[in-house]
Length: 313
Ligand code: NDP
Ligand code: OXD
Image 1 (spheres, helix red, strand yellow):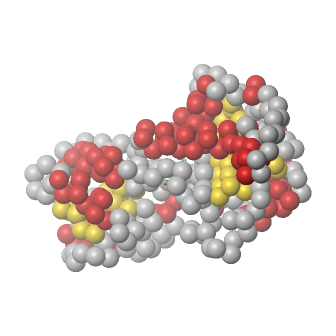
Image 2 (cartoon, protein in one colour):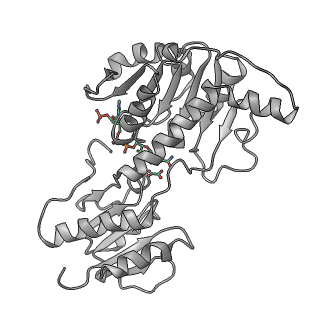
Image 3 (cartoon, rainbow, N blue to C red):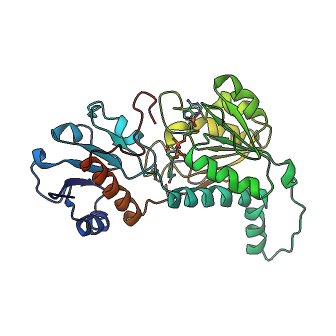
């Protein structure tokens, strides 16, 4: 790169130094928002996750905005998001691998009755049981089968589960059944003993995990929401668990984050709740992809992983 590119880091308090180091080492002048003084007109690039609405608009010379997450809904909720500036999302195998691990782990916790054995151990009880359902009859449905959904689906397929995916466009993935579009959603749901949400949060997918959708799942289905809290109607999930229609749920994301201590989701006996940690973007890996993106722009080349703002993901 010629002159030093200037970037504003918009990360939670305390996290700035993790990003500052690799960026500075690559000769990027990085200012930490909320900590460093900067002249808005000097900022050419921004890197963040959920910037304060209006902040990006206040930077008149932005050339690109980089998301430190795969999901970019935190940018598009800003009515003043500068739409003429390319928004680049984070896509990397390291993130997909962690997400796939989380999904596989929670499918197996339920499938292998892990919570029942943990409670038996606490009581020093020797309680042996057959698997409630053979693996080959335990059908997995990936709601959203993009970068992350595909990796998770392939890992589960390799463990012997029958796997299907639902997406906007038809997919051809070895050993994985593809359902596409709104017209095929009901058929997909009817054959999902595990429903795993890996959709982006858009106006079309907000609150998709609701009472009507749960009613279309097989009795005893298990739901994993690892995408965004805005996909789920929390009260509808609790009702479907309490009625016995759903057997359980794993949640990593919530409508309000951090999840308030008073939320019933923390203590529901059929819910496993984790604090948005299914995958945590590695600053060194992500900084590398930001540096590559900046270099591409400076050379006048096309950027990878630019979000289609009309599609919303
Ligand atoms: P992708 O954009 O690669 O995949 C999105 C998938 O959703 C695609 O298959 C897409 O279909 C499908 N889709 C989008 N809209 C619709 C719709 N209206 N109807 C049917 N299908 C739809 O995203 P990623 O796999 O990279 O990430 C998925 C999400 O995971 C992120 O948006 C983020 O919210 C979440 N995430 C959560 C993390 C965590 O720590 N909990 C970490 C990382 C990501 P098509 O392929 O046809 O376009
Ligand atoms: C992401 C996330 O979108 O961590 O990458 O939630």
